[in-house]
Length: 113
Image 1 (tube, rainbow, N blue to C red):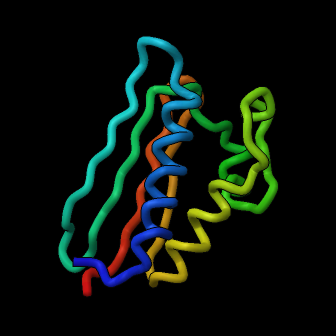
Image 2 (cartoon, one colour):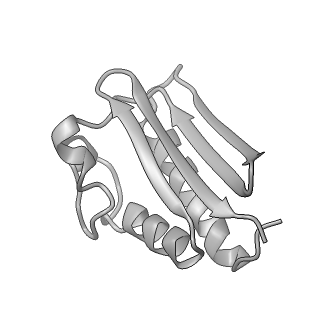
Image 3 (cartoon, one colour):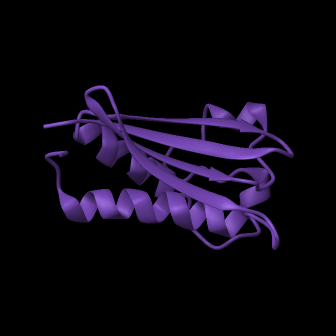
């Protein structure tokens, strides 16, 4: 069990899942996994979208940042910064592994209570 603000964690999951669906082309996949790893709960959202260029990876959690490929999509550039802020406020971490043309994997780790 994670001791947390349920509404805020629902926002975290919704933002990550929404991004995966939004950036995955028709016929692609967006997978969601929740599991326990040691003393942490892990939420992993994987997609087969276009991926994130290496030069943008360090900035995607910055408030109002919108990468070149995201400018054509709806949104204000606040979703991932909100994800990071909420996760860190709960003592957790968020990271991303991505490669252009191969999709992205966002992982959230939260301490178990």
